[in-house]
Image 1 (cartoon, rainbow, N blue to C red):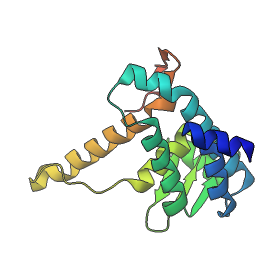
Image 2: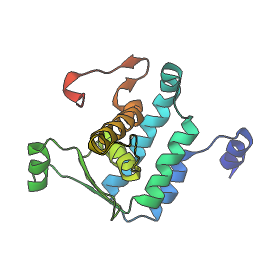
Image 3: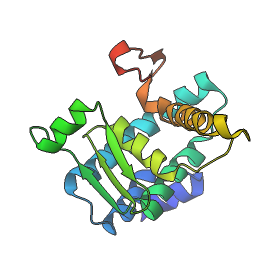
Image 4: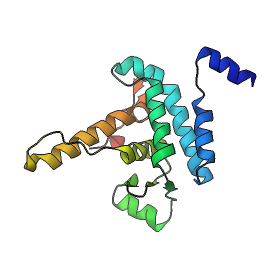
Amino acid sequence: MEKNKLLAKLNIRDYNNELEKILEKKLFSYDVKNLLLSMLYKIENAYKDYETVKVEVPSKKEYIENILRIIKEKALKIFLVKSDTDEAAEFEENNLKYKVDKENGEITCIQNELAILTALLKLDEQETNYIGKDYLEKPINVMMNQGMLRASTEVIRDFNGWSWDIVSKEIQD
């Protein structure tokens, strides 16, 4: 109780606690819950430095609240792909990290913080028409949505303190 009063006075939010409360109401597996908490921990630790270097990004509060909203409202089921299964072989063969079924609120992904963050953001992705020409509409929309997704996941994908991780095998097309 004392901790909550202190945090309230300082206007500091305990996002881990908020995420745990959301996860209590979800029927996710223990591994999924741990992965989501690990993802949030990485974001919280890297965001201040990321915000300083990148400059034009949403505030940490806005970014994390958006992720919590997606988990609470849109992510109904999250499944992790276990290695040495047929599904893992299919993911590897097709070079997939995640699958998203927006209609049913389902995510299937490998056990990785970046993969689950990307899938969550993809689950919330809006269909936006960036250009009015019919023949350009689909490729431009796909490109813009992929660019926005890459930019939104950069905080744990590429940024590690004050250095940028640019391992070529991890860089997506």
